[in-house]
Image (cartoon, rainbow over all chains, first blue to last red; front, top):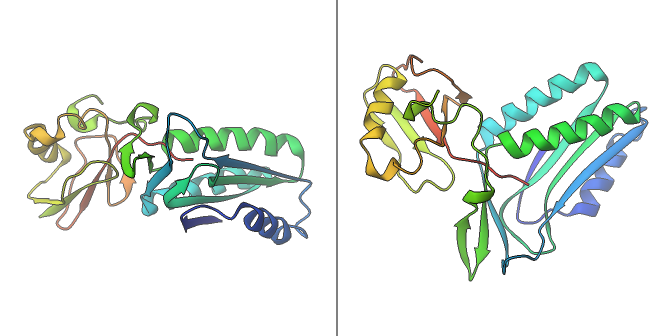
Length: 148
Length: 73
């Protein structure tokens, strides 16, 4: 399940809803990761652009990859502005036993940071400034410039 | 005719051009001064699937997307 939300995520509602959804699925482990905007460098918040077609195919590929392990994934992400101390990202793994969930959440979140087609902007004095120095080129980038 | 779209922070309108492979798209964009800071860091998708070869064949109506460096979360 992949959810996109305009503005900040309602973390208690989402975590509770996912818990209830899977409460009868015989999973022994539910491991959520919640990303919250921190106050640093004078930002008022962050803002996000999301390219949904490729985000959905990236997420579906992950769901298929962990299915043979008996695990399932859920993810929620914000579009637009998310202010300091609000949350923009939740990823969660459900699995029969803890080890698969612990390993999967780390791999999934790291690949999300490197591959998911989402662009982050700092909100400073009401302006959106692309967080280029914190961004990662997708594997294979540079094709048109002759790098690949 | 194909379309080329520029995602995220690339502030550039959609382009329409004749192209039979990504070589043709690369040739046009390399000459575009607006693309100088982006061309080496963008991944490329054709019809929403990431591709890895300039030999990728393009058909009438295809959509080429340029994806600059990402940072979700």
